[in-house]
Image 1 (cartoon, rainbow, N blue to C red):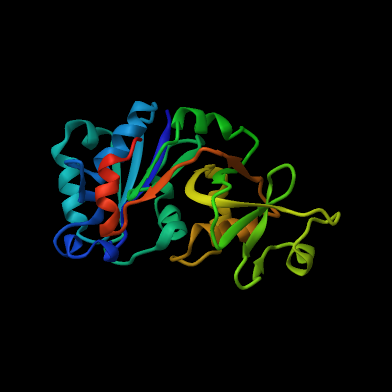
Image 2: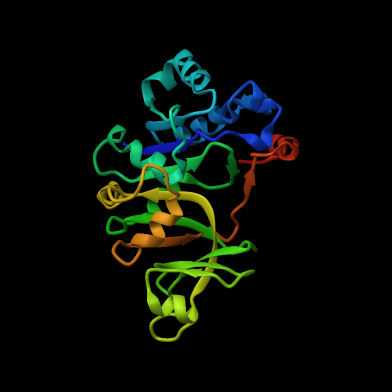
Length: 249
């Protein structure tokens, strides 16, 4: 069994006016809803258990899944219609919907990418609690890793702000031995071990997954996985829809 969670609960405000009448998960790209594109790609990679969280126009997503025999058999719904819980809180709420101890692939519904998901699943080693897909893409905010690619913190290069559970990283921006840390951009795609769910119990209902990882990376084995040729297209805004229809997944 290979399981995944598709984050589909967002309000889709950047896709207005389309999302005035539908959830962003059902916005069509090349004639297919975003949700279908992601589900089909993951099924082609061998995934056979899915959790989809819903909030904005959630019933439309529920009905869409129910109309498809394959989807209705493979997909479970995590209902956030009462409260939108963010990426970490949504995963925490859905904990009981996953099976066993197999890693959970986390994917945003409004992201298109060129990732080979069979390959990525193999990068999450049995002794790792999470594998975060990263690249050398230029951004304002970077995750910080030591030379073994273990997560050490986060840095905003514009403001100089550093977040880390390690005091020496917060103070110097370097490793314990004075080495420069490696800075990589997070893709938003990651593989999460259910072993981490107990560490989420002290977190509130709503929180971001990066906040969680930064709070526990000194207690858990959270690693970065580099894909130098990574291409990611955020389909969360109107001007990217035309480009999305030409994107090669």
